[in-house]
Image (cartoon, rainbow, N blue to C red):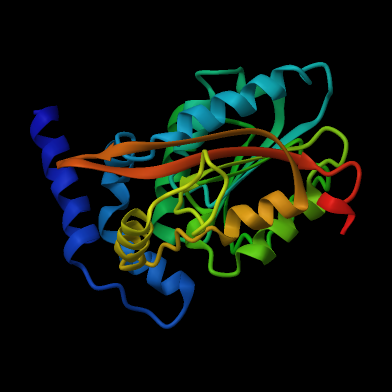
Length: 263
């Protein structure tokens, strides 16, 4: 029975991804139009598609554990969708390390799934906030962890989103973690470099769903934070043989010695 349900759910997600036309006048409307029909089926499919998520959370957890003697730690998961990142993080550390966890997302249907999950898991320190990540500010102005898990590529004003996150990231102990799909620059670092066809194909394909895989987002991260960890790889897509979508994991902290090259 579970096998049949999972297959039906996956087909619903694939139908939305490949055949549905995204409509809406605002970013929120477009996201709700896209994710609304697949919200309940979202987690099962994405677990086999968002390959960098676990690695990013694991690396973030390692650094949170190093700070476990510090009281009042706050995690803000921006574009946190259904709250699945919180479920996964619980595999790597005790969620009681955090005084507060905020799951922030602009998409109402995904937030509703997250609220049900919070209630079912009994998470007393997790709050789901339906809001634009460019506007959200946590009650504590010193978050020790901020994450963008496959969400930064879906935020058109990505610079504003990163700037807002940096406004409340703890300047001494805070870590910002990102996992996402990407394409490289034409001339990029060797471990990021893609050829022309890879850059063109993946950027054009994801653009159909309103996802921008261009290199500008990571360039902005590199510019504004000090990198502490990076991984570049590629992972398969359920029911799509042979193709592997490129993804990256990137962790950074507030730059301690000014911008690179002294500029």
